View 1: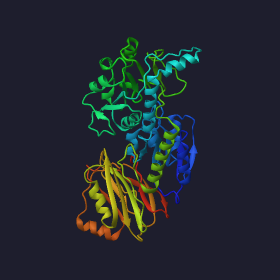
View 2: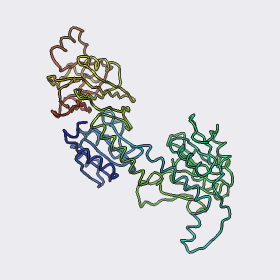
View 3: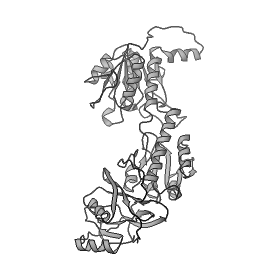
Length: 485
């Protein structure tokens, strides 16, 4: 989190990024190294230590940035995942080391809504079957069972970001929209909320599943639910593959319980291309299947690239954490002339804020904001200052080594200096806080404030100043866990 103009930021790119992201990073002055070849954990551990930022896509079978890899990122300030989730990153370890992980969970929603709309029209006119037949040299000019979509009813199961956009698009095609959601949500347009899932299934001509991968959504559409649908109805799932019981759906299609289906997501679907795939739905009439491409469009990709890249740049330049999957969300503001910024990461436990306020009380704090997420606390504070001499004593240890105690070393450098510090978890027994008179004397004598915390306040610990940049306006503390000697 150094100013790009005053300090080189090195970025490791592990996958091809959207053009919009690459342009933003280059314009910000970042040094970009690309490594698109698949790396082993050992290779990543060896390589990642020299970089401040790592960027990759989210379409991986398993975790790529593992515990071991992230712990090796001694200079790592941020991780950018270009996609809607961060399953490829060990979020817990990244959080424990004070490394924000940025994603873009909502920029794909318009693309998913659009593919659902296309499925509705294609199913209504049996386009999939007719196209397959004519490719095989068969000319079947038939329209039995084909209908217009206008005036029909679309039932949406899950009225979130995608579901609500789908409803708006459907109304433009003159469809009546109703929905069911476990949460109380405000309808958009003329959409009508239903009290139960059964009502939506029984009354709809098209049923679109738009649910998350929460455990309670596994097989929410099974044999019983399919039996409630009209015999002329269609089922569409472009969200969570496990939400539909595929075997029950295949039986319903074969028996004529429903007229057709379209799926863009499947249980246990492969992640790599050119992979063999089998499903009981193969070969069935009026069934459309696509390989999980609903959220992949040129426009969606550019939006994701722009959002994640800007979020990473704003974090590096301002300390902003909007768009993170593992940090509290704070939108940072531009730094005013004559002020210096402190960014602090700490464990969200009793006693930490008291210590931070004690340190900042010696200075004129122009603006300060705090937010927390899980066990992590994040503070941005701007200090109004002209000049202050700063001494950094970063290797203070407490005596009486024990198992689970720690000390907080918080250096406030309020001249035009940016300090990047790493944290070592010192195992020390708790010490008593100094008396008020001691505090005042310390304020008068030095800008280097080092105090032990109570045992309950297991804070992230800055231990060593690794770089000093005399032209930056930021004082940045980056924390990592390390065993003490």
